[in-house]
Image (cartoon, rainbow over all chains, first blue to last red; front, top):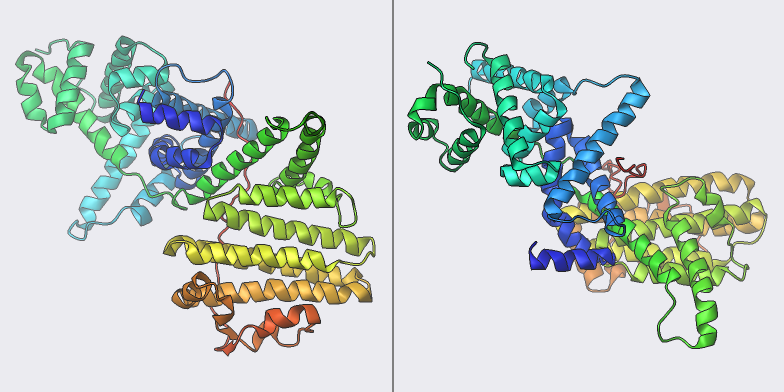
Length: 193
Length: 325
């Protein structure tokens, strides 16, 4: 672990405001992106981001401290927040909710993505269909496969880092990644894999 | 014929693809496996493009930041309360933790008012005249001075003003006189909130001012309702308090329209130079001796701005996160 980061964490353990602010400013945007990729709702991802940091501050005081990488530990907490969120929703709705795909498409297409003025309407429609198809296919994967893909291709982590987050061996991550990509390809383009 | 691609070969190819972005070039490195590898690499590329679309966080992660820092401040205060001072005398060591804990718990109850409803009654229990009241105030001061972040200070200042209103409510309900000190404490907090806003960078300043407007407006409405059950003696005090909230609202609204003037006046330490309207909500308010200086220190200026100010809470109450098993 980087020395500067360990110093910051030591200070954060004492609830020192400046250290916590620095850690938050550094990691919150990444955790927000990760959470958005998992829940597809910007507002929810933002709320969960602050929950993750409150959990971090609580966990820093207990035995549940990270052992290898702070970053991996942070992503594990973020992953747990996603699981908790869906569990709470399940309890409320008595069934596992589908990912809010339509909301995601509306958000990404309507207001948050700067439209390319040169792109014609057909191209935009094609892009929407492709996104829809990919998202639907992703939803068919197992939760572990989805997580591996988000960490590898969303967070751009190396397999070792993903292994740290998911507490598995690098070999297991490579196998999960292979199966996930192959399954995704089969769903998107049957016959090619 | 398709050839089997090992997991490590796929990983190695994905790493190469990540660096170069070139599928063809990556496949050229493993011509025998190219046919099997190609759809996997293309899928990986599609995924990377798909995951790159992340909208900006709606509140720019600012609200969360305030929430996290406020949580940290509370934890810091609690920790200070339960750890006895290292260099205190034996007699002090016996008594200090208890006193400090009581003070900090009171402060915790205060700051948690917007977050936890059931604690409201606990916070109300300590009123002016109670021996513990001075302890409550000093713990508030201690908590406030331990904050460095401007946004946290604004949220806390508004929360502490709300606490003064809760005290006013309790006194009105008990038909006891409202001491002028409550007014001065609220005045100090609201001035501080405005001062913090004046020193904040542009987008943050607008958020802070909107937050102040939204909450002082609500607080003013609470006082309006309290007037219905107030004794004639307390009506004047309630009016003073309302005027103070109104004045704060107006300053914040004018500041939103004229941020430069606001900054200049407050940063120079001369808030009285902030031009305020003479009519509008301030007209018709009974001006008491205590308020004279406050009101007359503001020269007349243009009419109250008519813009609608959006309610932008800096601190959004949320449920405590539940740890995953």
